[in-house]
Length: 327
Ligand code: PMP
View 1 (cartoon, rainbow, N blue to C red):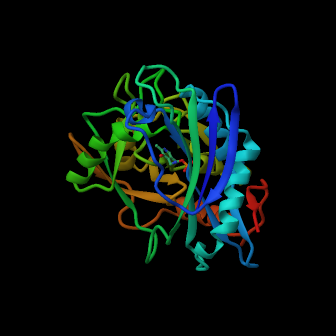
View 2 (cartoon, rainbow, N blue to C red):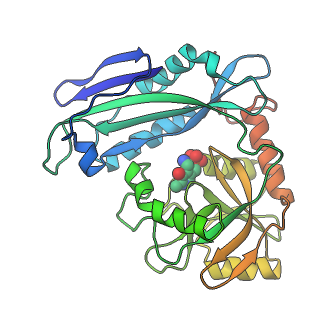
């Protein structure tokens, strides 16, 4: 199925519907097709040990959706409408939920400019939709480290740009960089900051953490050019609660490379909704190449991953009230 809600200036959000998933008719002059005024979110629903169904921190996705809307000059969808649309789709598509321990139903809420108009200004009409798709475990047969390519050619976002918003245009602009990573035999691209081209920003679809030799964590700060990941925020809170020091500060590629060689940086991991927490194995750049995790998963990475997955799956206490039961 799919959920749709329409918006028009002067009228607000109207006509909420849950219907069979079907193509959406579009005029060739629909604003989104030309100027990419579009935002989205991604989160998972999954089965709990008692047979119930939950989502992980959907309120955080709602808040980020609202921030993305603001940056993209789009109207605010009420938080209740956002949450209710997810509930309804899960309820009606419940049979799509994998019952396995690791599978989930991926939910994709999004909104786009639907006005038929070729001028360049914010649209006066929008369509909000939610679709869902069952996904298996991200890693079948155990967690595998990702290999990453530090792109020398492309930046993801500049100060004042849309880096902190989850808008389709950011991903369109990143496709050449992702293709470059694949050509170089890597799974994911790593972006450096746009100003000095020196500091690690994030991966194509994940945030990044470094584990130092004293067991503390370091992650790049939210300066407006990286996506404020919900997994990133969860890792910071979980590690802090466990008494681990977490620093949000810039980390240069040189610091990473030297740290990996000297042992000052013991582990590095990427995090996001899809893979939760995954070790970074090999790092390649145009100049050099180095290895962080040699095939395996570091202790701290494994510990954080287990803590987070156990909370998500209802196998451990939920100290922050993150697990949002739907059914
Ligand atoms: N950065 C980018 C560019 C992403 O696309 C994602 C995935 N949404 C993330 C980071 C991780 O965010 P989250 O933990 O909210 O999935």
